[in-house]
Amino acid sequence: MASHIELAQRYMTESIALLQRSGYRLSLNFDLGGWASLLRSAPKIGIVNPTFDPAHSALKPNEAFWLQLNDDVGVAACIADRLFVTDDFVGRELATGRLWYADPADADRPALLPGVPLGRFTGRVGHAGGLWVHPRRRKDGLSWLLPRLVRALSIINWSVDRHCGLVFEGIHDSGLSAQAYGFPESHVVVEGYFPPTRSDARVFVIHIDLEQIAAQFEDDLVRMTDGNCQMRDVATIVGQRVHEPMVGARVVKMGGGDA
Image (cartoon, rainbow, N blue to C red; front, side):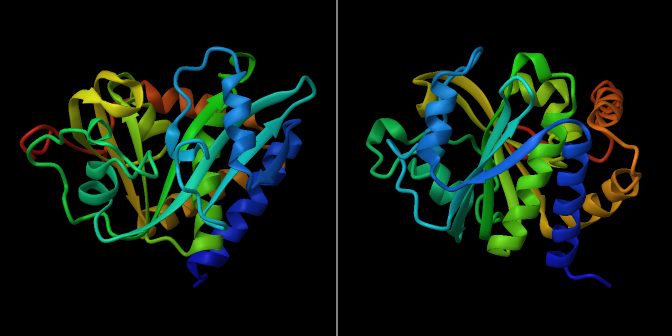
């Protein structure tokens, strides 16, 4: 049986081949200042996530990277990823504001809801964010592939135990976080003031552990190893999944009850 790292390496190889067949060029970058500059100039962008912005976060060498995807026109998409070694991703990194800021003030600490998953998401936690897809490429399946590709790279580079992300209510309720991004578990963690936006929001932490990532890779590779498969084929599958019920996704609402 292949190790998790070997499986992740295979997944990365097949993902790059899929992107190349589809007319994309992928680059791996370690200067997060480039990611922040790209997003500040990108069309139809909201906030620039401070988690990955060197102007706000203390990014350690070899503990953060970002991917840039280009097509024949220019930049088509990007995504960032960061490693947190923690005994409680929600209770320490999120609750203290250190998820976003190197030196958080009181206003940078969100009020967590009762029943949030304290003490569960521990160890070497990969945290992806800053996903942006150019409007001309938003029906090409890139929001499906890029989160999976950074999970593969975080296993190869950092031997992560799990991956966590944050999404707003609209993304979660649309089914994108489960069916497109591929996170089977979600919890409401903030309902009110959210420091990065300086406004009220309903925010979910989304989670997938190492064994679930491996199973996801195995399932995806069945399709990706078809030498004729292109991103438009993936986009069709993603579109079908997003409009299906979120089978197998575990959602925890305020108070900790299962949906």
